[in-house]
Amino acid sequence: MSEEKFEQFLDDYRLLIEAGFSAVKLCDETAAHRLFCAAEVLRSDAPEWALGLGYIALNKLEVKKAAQIFKEVLEQHPDYHIAQTFYGLALLFSKETRQEGERLIKDSMNKTDDPSVKNLGRVSLEFAETDLKKSKAPFFTGAE
Image (cartoon, rainbow, N blue to C red; front, side, top):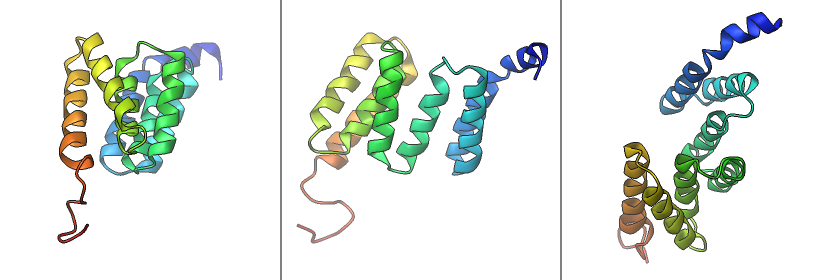
């Protein structure tokens, strides 16, 4: 593809990212993956496409894979607060890493003014407190 044609598509980067997250919400993993990979072709140095791949894994409850992706994003972009919050959320699912996840979420909430990051952090911490820290699974009555 010529450089001129390639440049035309750079403006579509954000559209690909938004469409990818929409596809995840619609449970269309194939479309979401393709959209995030197309975004990677346009801007491989940007973090959003990788965040999207981690979001796919998190939605599938592949929390180890999601955590690894978010960690890699943070290694490249340490001040990317949404990635830190998602990384913390992924860590919440394991008892061994839950405290670290809570710490990361609180840290990102304190460092940002972005209301969406703060909201995600608040909801994640509430989820950990009300659902993950219970001694019994909420779905099975009589479970011990």
